[in-house]
Structures are given as C-alpha cells and as structure tokens.
Length: 420
Image 1 (cartoon, rainbow, N blue to C red):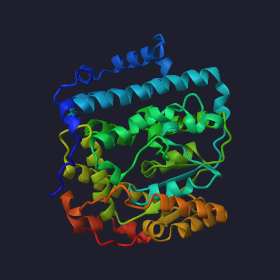
Image 2: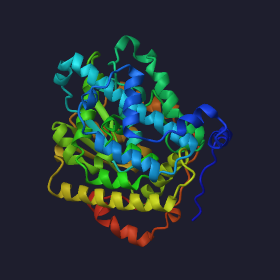
Image 3: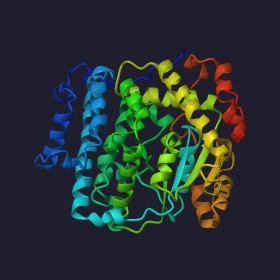
C-alpha cells in the first residue's frame, strides 16, 4: 500500500491540539439528537412544538443512528467535530425553514417538476463533466451549491447572482479544501458551482453525503436497507421551493447515488429522463476511493484507504449488476435513457452532448455549443492539479475485480482501460 494521507494546512494542527478555545468548546459537546434539535430551534427562534416543527419524524431514526456513529465510530478530530456540528445544524435549520415555508404557502406542493433530466452513473465516470456542460444551456436550470444548501426563501431572478446565501454556502463548501489542499485537484466545490442531489436529500438524513465524509459503518448498514422514498420526496420539495418565485426551464440534476435507487427515483419523478455515464470500474474504484479518503482526512486522523476501497468495490459491483438486470428488462425506459461513455465526454465533449440531445429529440444549437467550448477553455481538465491514484493502493485482486464487473462491461460495452 502506497497511499498516504495528504497534508493538511498548518493551522489545522493548532485547532486539533485544542489551542483554539472557541472551536474546542463547541467540539467538546456530544452529538445528541435532542440537543441538536433544540439548538436548531433556538437558532431560528422557534419554540418546541415537537416533531411537527420538522414536518414529520421520518428523519429521527437516521439522525439517531448517525449521531451515535459520530461518537462511537467516526473518530473525529476536534476540527472534524466542529465542522460536523455546523453541518448537521444547518440541515436541521433548513428542515425547519422548509416546514415553515410550506405551512405559509401550501400551494408550493402544486409546483410541477416537469421531465427533469438526471445525470448518474458510478462516480468518476464523467458525471461532473456532463453536468457542467449541460449547465451551459440557458434552457436548463441546474441547482447551484448555495441553492441546495439553503433553499429557503426561494431565490428570485433579480437578486440571484448576489444572494447573501452564496457566501454562506462558499464558507461551508470551501472549508474541506482549506483543510486539505489536495481536494480541489480531485473535486472542486463552491457556492456557485452545480451541486449534486445528495445535498437536498440530506435534509431527510438519508444520504451518501454522510458515508462519504465519515467512517460510520452502522449508518451505512442502516442506509443500505432503508426506504429511500423520503429522501427523494425531500429532494422534490426542495426543487418545488426553488422554482416557486422564478421561471424555471427543465431541471438538470446529478448524483452517482441515483444509481442505487433508480426505481425509487422514477416512482417520485415518473417522467424523468436519465443520462447514465460509463467507465471502466477498475479505474473508477481507486479514483472514488481517493476522493472519499481525502474528504475524510478533513475530519479524522484515522482513514483506512483499503477499507474504503473494499466498500466501494462491493457497492458498485452490486449497483452496476442491478443496472444490467434492469436494462435487460427494458428498465428504465430506453427512450428516456441515454448511455454515454466517459471517453466520449473527454475526447469529443460537444459531440457527446450532441448525441445526448439527439437521443431526447432535441437539437444542440450553435449558441449552446459555443458556450460549451468556452466552459471547457475556462476550466480545462486538471486546472487545479493532477489527481493521482493507483488501483494497487486498494489491496484488491485485480483479476477478481475484473471478473466481478465483466457482466456490466459486456452489457454496456465499457472499454477496458490501462489501470495504474
């Protein structure tokens, strides 16, 4: 094994040594569900009316599992505890805000999310590239980081680009990269960038946003057997709120997590379109493991690269195998599902988008094509540095994993890559 944790910023050592008293005092507080609910209510000046304040009690069980895992399993540093407390409190506060907003304006439930396009596929397969390029089309509405972190009140066109929530979201989203400098070379986050669906689903506390950042095996086990419908219903509510006060074209949304829950996604969004990206899983595994390990370094001194790799190997073997099973049954509807290869989005991105549009009966006009070219020129691949990773660091048997994913690669004609 050659993977070593990336270096953290110098100031982090002082925080984790307990030398920054205000942070240390907050970090010393235990993660307790009732304490967190009370603090969220207090921050918004809301009296305690029970679980109705938060809409219903469907989030209580996952929150209970999660806070126990933070204490017993995650091995958080002082800084990690401080970041995590702010993270969870923001979600609880927004949940309170969503409930209050819907109570005041119940017609928000009548907002129609029409034929959204969901980008999905295993991580590191080009989903982010495709998402960013689809965001170049003015006919699309792609949620920005600040919208999914703080959707209430609904944004308005007149102040969209100067909303005060942009800075708040930047503060949160940029913090892990300020702790671990290597993160931007793997995946960049900011308040004005397109944001993944997990951030909206996290308000239901059923989200891989937690499993990515933290070693929480008990929560992983709970998440894998739970009903994901509340997470997708929360996701839809967030979209309904976001489109309430400004014109919205077709929503374009993205997350690899949808790969695990396609039937549930389509039950909540029956007219959804899907764009599924594909890449050699033996390249995907070390790349996503490197990303997750780096995220965890921002929160903990104890990061087991091989354990993370084993988890992803099993998770994506299962999900990609299920994708084949669904496809063999004609699900999701092939007319509403586009399959694209990672190599196409890298070597000929405009051509790849043109094929996607054609599949859905649309034409890629010259203006959007030009916007895509300008986006690619402004942010060329690797502009924050080179992301280096190796399959050998996973401690997995290369031949065995090649066999494990053979059915998937054969079904979707996924090229075998030369894996480091």
